[in-house]
Length: 250
Image 1 (cartoon, rainbow, N blue to C red):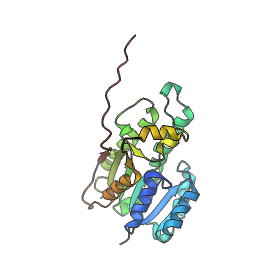
Image 2 (cartoon, one colour):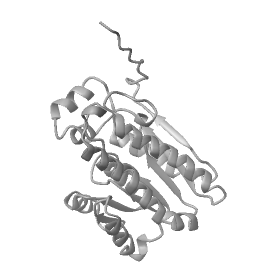
Image 3 (spheres, helix red, strand yellow):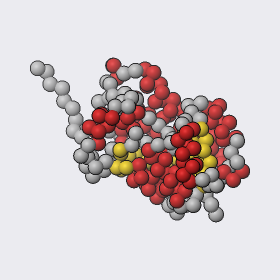
């Protein structure tokens, strides 16, 4: 039986790589994202037989609901939800940060994720499906400038554990995947397109790739139905835990 997966944030990075990974294994894929032209590129590359694009801003609950209501019959039976859409904005300390950027991160990483999950829970319970939430090590390990981004990812991790508890007995699996350094468009988005900043961050570090994380998502999604990975933290070998900061008076 062909299974169906819905992947948010499918126009770049982990999401686009996951779309390709699941299509390669014969799944039906619903790919969502703001950038219709990027979604069309996926359709052009893979065809529309098993790939259905949904172009909308994940923060727009009405657009989200309309898109779900308009799904073709072949794509309505969603077996796996991958809440991948998310972003970090800004690197300033909290006292200098943009409140508008904070709100955008909360609206995207928290509110939209919860809204979509709530909308799909009945179908996922009916099909004994799976929810895979993309969190981050930033939700566990604070760093200067992480402030609201880290807070939103801590929410994703805790929300995943709460869902796991509430869905006890339904057969629905819930996993929080928490990646560390991975080279995608993440830093370009965070810095407003500063390629030099991205190059400095990843240079010489051998970071993970989008394809690496897509493979992890695929592994979790295809586990036997009696197994659940609650949390999966993953880093490149070149990254490990940092020390504490200490301020010293002059």
